[in-house]
Amino acid sequence: MLKGLHFTFLLLITSHLAFSENAESSRILIHTLNYLSQDYAGAVKDGKIISATEFREMQQFGESSIKYFNECSPNWSDSDSAAIRVLIYRLDSLIEKHAPFNVVSTSAIQVRNKIITASGLKITPETYPSLENGKVVFKTECAKCHGQNGSGDGPEGKELNPKPKNFLDDEKIKPVSPFFVFNTVRLGVEGTGMKAHTTLDDDEVWNVAFYVLSMRYQQYTDSSGIKNDDIKGLIDSIPLEKIATTSDEDFLKLYSIKDSAKAKLLLAAIRLNQPAKDNSEFITTSLKYLDGAMDLYSQGKYHEASQLAILSYLEGIEPIEMQLKSNDPRLMSKLEEQLQRVSRLMEQQKPQIEIKDSLNEVKKSIHAASEILSKKEYSFLLALLMAVSILLREGLEAFLVIMVILSILKSANLKNAARWVHGGWIVAVLAGVVMWIIGGSLLKGQIEHMELLEGVISIVAVFMLLFVGFWLHGKSEINKWKDYVTKMMQGAVKSESMIGLASLSFFVVFREVFESVLFLSAINIESAGKQTNAIILGVVIAFVVVITLAVILLRFSTRLPVPQLFKISSLVMSLLAIVLAGKGIHSLQETGYVAIHGIPIIRMELIGVFPTIETCLAQLAVIIVVVVVWNSSKKKVK
Image 1: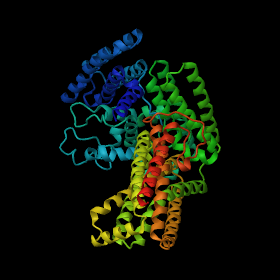
Image 2: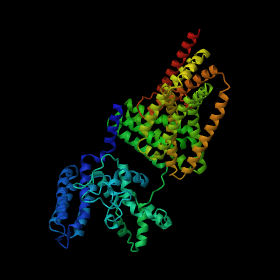
Image 3: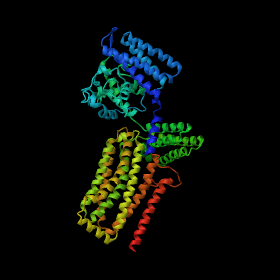
Image 4: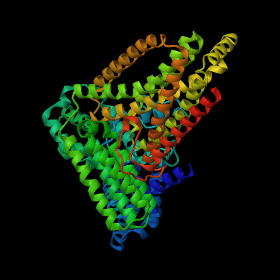
């Protein structure tokens, strides 16, 4: 756990170098100038102060600008510092002289742009923000003050002074850019109820910033006018940086649109735009992490470099694993092995030339994967078939265990106990439905934690399978079984004794549900949400197939003698424990919590066999335990 926290901390530092002391002070300075450039209009008009309170606030903004400049300037070049110093002090002087709004605003924007260039501050999101995810953030973080629809009438905002901003007020929001909103959410506004939201990551802040500026145009979401080819062509030509840093007011000036209806339509198209995501995003992420890993390695930060190489797989390749497997399973296996090898070589601190050669090989494979995926899009049929195949594979694995337990309970006429088993797997499936609803966010920077949890669940399931398997084996003698059934019936199957069965049912099914949700969410993201119906239909078909198979086999199982059924069941559970041992350790290897030492054997993922010493040792350990217990029980019988 400490290792995980340490790594998370290191990653945070690595991925936020742009927000070091220099960048953070620069962001606050830019934030201050943004407010000054907009709010000065409420303080001075025609050279006269129209609000003493507002004017005092503008003076404070001017003083704060000088203060933050003095903190930042030592980190800039001498020429940038000198130029910005002149502009900052000139701006402060203009405020004191009650200069016109347009002069002060232009001056504030000019110095802001200079600071952005000098500091190298990132003013653009990594990927196009999601309005859907932004809406979720808004509902949980902002609606309590700003209201559910953004009109500034939230229950916690009623007592605030000044009142929360009304995001539906066209005049007040027109001068605001997403970058302005980003800084406001990230840093807050001193002296108001708008607090800094430090717990949100940059993606979440950008998402809500874009969503806030889309709120005035929600009535256009179904408008066919937005789909106009001319407008769409124009939107596609606007760089993300410009959309992120330009206000609606400035867009209207830029395109010189006089007609108010056309202006509204254009702005709605810009603010509601959601480009379709494709696999290139995941490929780009993978390559970005590899480049970062090489940079860290050249600095002597070997462990951090190794962890970034792991993230290259988890956040770049893992989300497109199923699609790549369906097109070229050998390339998918090769990619995983290559990335594991790179991580291992970095941990071993091999010469840089060897690391570079390995990275070049990985990049060739990644580009090959990109080429394959770019030629194939998700059709309804493909998404349907992939969803069915995923659910059948995962569902049948879990079903084997549930079938064994239910068969035995049915043979013994222990209906009360069967209810506990059904309760366990039903809860697991419901948990999966909840996970699917929030599935898109699971893949956004959280895959490492998902793989870790999947590994832990697998290992827990191994122990539970072995325990129940040995218990079944111990009851395979007919006399022992009769004694057990007699005691069970006499005790009326107390609830406390059934918790173990319910837990086993839950963990075994949840492990498979968990992995299924990850893969199905990835398919949904890769298809830009266009094939959700196909995925849902695939889930229904697979579920019907598994349930039908379960009913048939359960009926057949009652014809088997109880001792024979127990022996077969304990054998099945032992085999499943061996499979899950390999898969569980493999998941932990993918997150870097377990070392990786490759061996030249064939990879057979279906039965949990992976070409590493650690996974094979885990499976060997389970095999030894099973053999020892079986042999010892035979000796007792003799």
